[in-house]
Image (cartoon, rainbow, N blue to C red; front, side, top):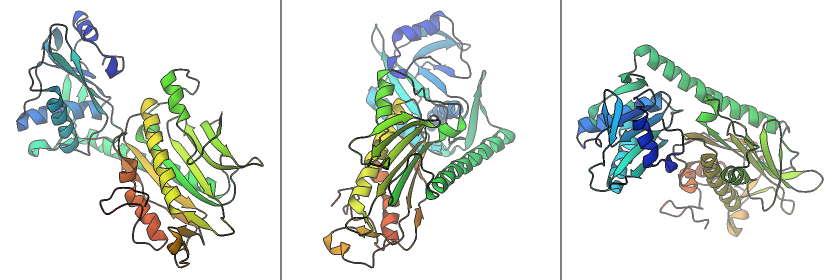
Length: 391
């Protein structure tokens, strides 16, 4: 594949492939024309895309004339509009593959003589294997130096076993971290109170050798690191530790009310503590949801800038909440029947397949369960249309 960010690829980079006679390989494929709109054309496109995703990722380049896999010349694509082509291909990757394929990016490269060439960059999927389902198709593909090929039974068994073991590792990581917090073994001493704990775990973090360079001075990376901040904090301190980069808010006496840790492999753990208010054990529904939504939004954007690819799992947990009541509004606050009857609320995982997802919309099922735990039918911070409004 072209070793540079897809946004920076130019005609000169593509011409260099031709001048060097760079052949098709395990991670690069040339196509003269765009995929046809027929079922056969859809399947051929998705076969190429999933083969790369199921193997090690790579680039599909549309608008290159090739002979026996050797690029000969650039050929401007014939198409109605770039937006229509992009919309069609994105729709195919969303609806013609199971599970849905994320991590596919597109760039139309303008040519000096007019027209454009399309580069489709496919990231290695950490949620593989992906099956082509468009047009009644039902096959899994991989890729080697000779091109795409159907995965055999042994390869499929290995892929599914790997996928299941990854899911177990993710859940085990979360369980171990919650156990440490429950035992008071936090990364920084926390003030007493109810803890709202958030984990963002990209699959790539536990299935690859990816590591973040915490000493980088590149502006984009520095800005991304700064966005991994404690939930709800207006100011914070930061330092490196053995696990990664820790940011935390001070509350005096060496204690903190919130922290966020970016592990070196890209996992984020964050916690916010809610202390007693006027002697009452109260969990503020509005502030909890708002701070969590904002944290997830900034963390996902930061992970993208740090070079991680989706999907990722989001976990929300509440610890030390026994006897706490839910602050909804002044009237409901007086209803002492709405309290937590357990000390820990461990919610199921939420799969995020795109960094640009709206966290408020995606996390509604989790927030509904939190409200259920306090005796309410749903989160009333969402309006009748399902949009988070914060009342």
